[in-house]
Amino acid sequence: MSQSGEYSQSKPSEEEQTLRVYAGDTLLFSSNRNWLYPLLDFEIYLQSISDDPRGMVVYDKVVGKAAALFLIHLGIRQVEAGILSEPAKLAFERYQVRFSYHQLVNRIACKTEESLLNEFDPWAAYELVKTRAKKSGPISD
Image (tube, rainbow, N blue to C red; front, side):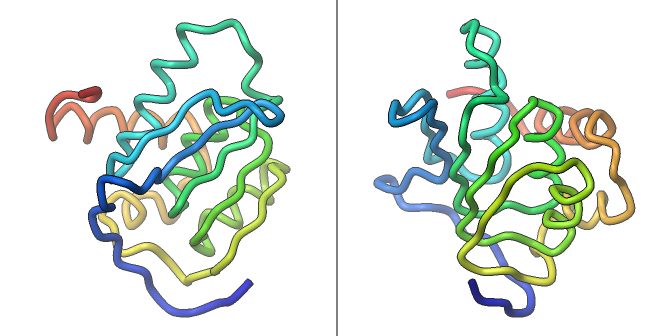
């Protein structure tokens, strides 16, 4: 685990899976989209299955506070992040989500993270993300 300043997110290559969700060793869901769209797509996926998200493990390339609160809202209890922001770490600690990371950064250079710096309500974060996504275009490809 390493720590540094601020991380600026860039668009992933087509081969990268920025988000993977497992139940045990079984890959349930993956996405290589950018921003928070993989989580929005994952929410749609969750609505189509009967599995309990509390037993799933989420591997996410970059987890800022918006993603952390969104995952908490969805009921995820274990997260492994490539890059984790300090505000996301605080949210996971507050809601007792198990987490690990490769690199801890002060924050993610993202307007959504900035908007949620003082927010700890998962529902409020969820609503903000959904509103921003609607302004940006379709949620799922």
